[in-house]
Image 1 (cartoon, each protein chain N blue to C red):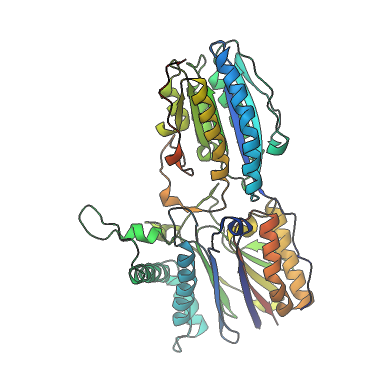
Image 2 (image 1 turned 90 degrees about the horizontal axis):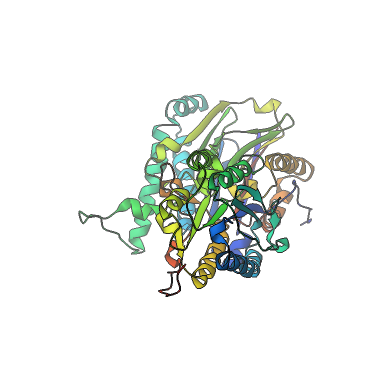
Length: 273
Length: 235
């Protein structure tokens, strides 16, 4: 099984107009003969989340680091890792990702000597500081035998093959502009995961496509979004991942400009025999 | 690198519905309805300009009037560039409940899309409702888009019932008092700017949103709400 991974984040056309930075981030680790880890985060960008671009970068870095440490453990076979994700994916592993994000954000906040709001008892209001870095997080780890997917907040994880389109995680659709966030006080209740054994050999060529909500929000409706995902796979099959990767930036920029104007990230894991 | 044409389906801006709900009961006749007509017509160029500055959203405007019953002045949502204000005249009762029912029917999915931005409802009224408005309001607030809507009320003159208008907005600060023509123009102008604030492409953590029935989502900056003038010529 060969896995090719690539992704891009583009600054939204509206953010170009109002001078805001890109608040999306993406990162991946691809050990094609072992596992692939991919992560996408979308910083909220609202006034109460001033540093959400940094929060998003920290989120994808933490996700990749935590999963890499788990998956690189030489004492674990893929089957043992499957069992581990099965028992702890929605519990200890999710908790570790959230905890490390909070620690990294707090460290960054102190290092940059940013505003420290005090509570009535005089102690530092850590939750208020975390809110400044609020972000969503989507991620996957993919082995030849199974995948584990993780999601907090909006965005989409799509699985596309010749058999069609499916969502790896069914997100709770919240209308409007609100979303679940890594900075929520009850964030662990908002974590969604999916662990699946897959016989990739009968599905390839196929792809997983992780996108921030700017992507789906740019299409006139969900069926046009799904159609797009299928067309991305068709293009991958025709031209291969290198050429698609080279074009992705321009395509996403056009999608934002003609669509919802938000930052857009797309990260793709293309799997072939 | 070969430059390939972008794959993908049909793209579109996110729709933002902006609805004027105008009380045209008998007590609004004369200077009040003239001021409303003047002020809304004056804000249209500003709304068009604001929409042009924000290419991320498709601003769709429409208006309804209510007195003895309620009806749409603009039957379908119209792009702000094509929206024209036709002067209204006033007579009859104040059937606020009927007006809310009319709006509610348009906030279900469909005809609303789930990818829309929160709709903005601006209610202008100078008096007490003469019909049963509570159940209509409760039904509006049960709708997913009803809950998420940004509701602003402009309370015209001394006889308007601010408590009822606060029930509609879910937030006392979003009831704007206009006791004279100058204030009315100022408040209508401010209400029209809310579309720009709502359409900014950003998200926010759900933790930031106050919960509970009738509480408006605070997606707008209320720090710049204009204060009423201390004028002598009050309605």
